[in-house]
Image 1 (spheres, rainbow, N blue to C red):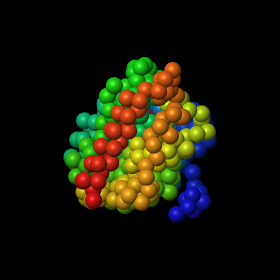
Image 2 (image 1 turned 180 degrees about the horizontal axis):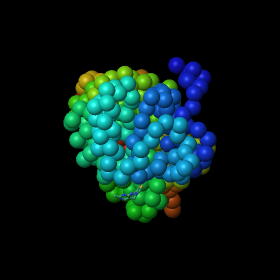
Image 3 (image 1 turned 90 degrees about the vertical axis):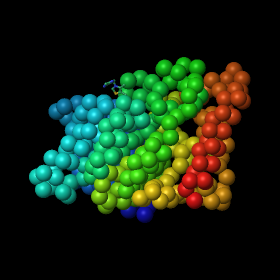
Length: 301
Ligand SMILES: Cc1ncc(C[n+]2csc(CCOP(=O)(O)OP(=O)(O)O)c2C)c(N)n1
Ligand code: SF4
C-alpha cells in the first residue's frame, strides 16, 4: 500500500495545538485513518492532551476521553467493559499515551489491562521524553541523551518495553515508526482485526525535545530504523516477524548504519561531540544497540 492509497477521510481536523513537525500529529492522522470513525480514544496527561486543543474546541473528530496520567489503560478497560455490557462490541477502544505514561507511570495499569485480556489497543507514541512538561527523562530516554533532568547526559540505558510487553503473551504487539506510515497503517488495521489486548509502539522523534529542525522529523525516524536504534517488528501469539529494513538487517542483507549518523544531528547528544568527541559514551550507545540485536537474533529466529 502507498500513502496515496490511504483513506482520504480525516478524523484529525484543523486547529491542533502541536509544535510544527510534531510526530504525534503525523501518527494520529494515520491511526485515525486505519481505525476509522467507530473508535473511542482514552488519552492521559501528555502532549496529545494539549494537541487536541482547548475545550470547547477540538482537533479530534472522534470521541475522546481525557484521564489522569497513570490511568490510560485502566480508563480504557472501563470504557471497553461499559460498551460490552451495552452489547456494543463493534467499537474500537484505544488508549493513546506517551512513553512517560507507558514505560513509567502507567505501566501498572497497562500490565493489568493486558493480563485481564481487555479487548483494546494500547498505543504508545514514544518520543523518548516527558515532552509536555518540558523535556524530562523517561524510562525510554536513551543513554547519553540530554534532558532537563539529565543535563550532562542520561547515565542509564532505556528499558526494553517490547520485552516487557511480550512477557504478557498477548495476541498482538508491534513496533513501528512515524517515518513508515504504511507500516503503521497496516499494523493498526491488523490490531483492530484481532480480539483481545493489542500493543503498538510508535517511534516519534520530537523536534524541540531532541533538538533538531522541525522539517527533519521523518528523516530522524528513518535514521532511527536504519541505524538499528529502533526496530520494526510485530509479534502475533509469541511469533515474532521483523518488517522492512529491520528484517533485512536481521537477515544480514544490509548493514546497520553507524549510530553516529543519527545522533550527531540531534542537539540532545551535542555534548558527545563537542568540545571533543566522547568516544567512550558513543561506543556504549553502539554496544547497547549491538546487544539488542543479539537478543533479537537469539530469541526471534
Ligand atoms: C500524577 C501526575 N504527575 C505528573 C503530571 C504532570 N505531567 C503531565 S504530562 C507529563 C509528561 C508526559 O510525558 P509522556 O507520557 O512521555 O508524554 P509526552 O508529554 O511526551 O507527550 C507530566 C509529567 C501529571 N499530570 N500527573
Ligand atoms: S513537544 Fe514534541 S511531541 Fe510534544 S507537541 Fe511538540 S513536537 Fe509534538
